[in-house]
Image (cartoon, rainbow, N blue to C red; front, side, top):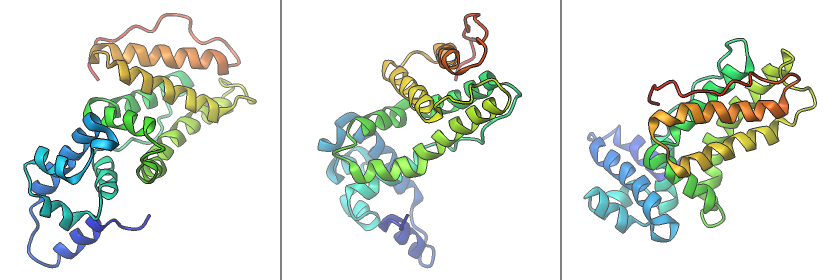
Length: 217
């Protein structure tokens, strides 16, 4: 992807006087919060500057438009997802991958992501940029985990892994909309993975009900 104006400005700033990084962080945080609360129709530099308590000129020096600002906000506030784990069984691996993604869905960043998905037609440039950089990697982790399950005979060889990935991500996004307490999330994710694997597996997965561990996410 080509660099946004913000990235070009930051590169030039490194050659001149130091730029106040605290201003950028205030704006990035405010951008996600504003978009999550107001949606695309209410998201603009004025709303963000008021929320961040930063003058609009500071925003215009860093970003050419609201699309660039929101793309940078998603980039910088999305925790890095770790590589797909390999614990020797698909249920444990997939539950861990799903839990990592479900953590991303917590808070304003997560709710903003759900809103972006819903408003993807209106926010096409932002949605496609975020999908290419963040969602594609998330999906690749799920597919990699399921392919490993196929190689071990835990997942049917004819299973449609793309559809399975969409089902899992959709369920996690829907769960995020209901925003259960942090002590409920682990049990919900485990049950969701179990239901998915019942449809994909060569053998029934453990029928025991996945209980929440009591550990917060």
